[in-house]
Image (cartoon, rainbow, N blue to C red; front, side):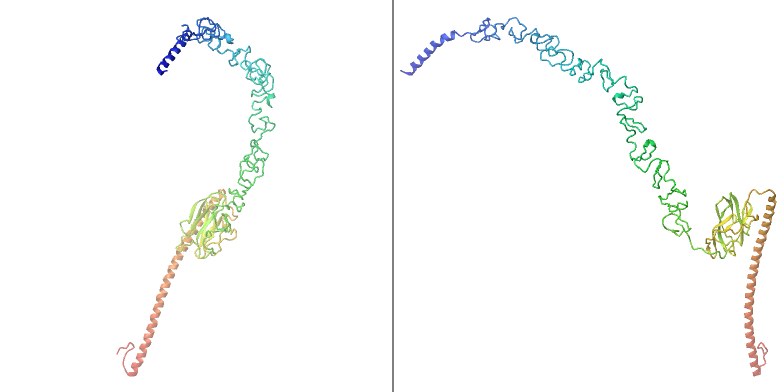
Length: 514
């Protein structure tokens, strides 16, 4: 058979078979509630809204919505109108309070006095100690059945009645701690367990030990006992004072008893002679045969000056020390009119004067007067031996030099005698008035004596001038005698000439004239 007629026969056969089937297509309505399961416009749809649950006769579009957990009216909402609090759970689904969105079946239980999870229990899990009071009900310790509001407060270091106070009524000193909580002295608010320990002889922190930590050096003395250096066991009140630059006995003084001479330098500080205040490190070295500055050398630095010698050729300078027991107006005079020294001198002070003669020496003797009273007469022409240390009553030679002997040497401390008008050697400004006239007479006699000495000096000067004139005259006389010798030799020569002339018969006179 040709191909074209065959294809046409097949098409006719198929069309004849399918036509009855298409005419019979209908959407199902399994629950027979009058609403099929097809959406409008689908083949076989009945033209009504689709049934959202074709197996449930109670679920169809337009049906009354019941509170049963199903969508009866097929609007896509379940139990709408039965969840007033909007928590997503209706009362028929287990919402035990549809006015409170925090309460529904399966909600988290919180401590608020409500059955949040709708399990017929309130605040479960918030009363662990089962004392009938939850934490939100005021239980301050939900692990302790004895701690709850209204309970009896006991003295045990806990807040039984949950009022925020511990052992109230059992803390007499108000320091926040009762005796049963560790307060070892409930009468003193500064004493309780855990308080800072003070140095006061009291167990402030109630640990059974008083003043711990206040004797760091372990010397048995605390800082509050007067230990002035708690880091040094050698320093404590009552300790032996050592020479170490420290206040060992904490009396406010350092190395007392180790500076016997009171020069401010201790033996451990370098004082090489603690019996002499003039000997210490840094002292001025003087010429005395001692190590004044404690450097191990004696009289170093040429402090002794040139070598000393005995008085010779007359004194040129003299230094005296006033040994009187009070200040005095001192005057030193020689044979000249002007004093060599005058001024007020304190006890122990020295005064110096120099020679006024052309050769630089002092006069033969000098007088030393104190308040116009002669206290010493010293011979200065070196006819008597003089030395440093020699005393003349109330004055003593401290230093001096002579023209030919240089500086005076030291000698024995000897008193040659005051040479005073008062022969017993006493010097007293408070003499009786009856002696004043005698003083004036002595002064007048001394003045006359001085005038006589000046006259003697003038006479000596004139005598020296006469000697010089005699020497000049003698020189001229000697010169004349030498001239006479020449004349004699000349005359002798002439006489020889005369004898010769006579021998020759020459008639000449003795001068050679004819």
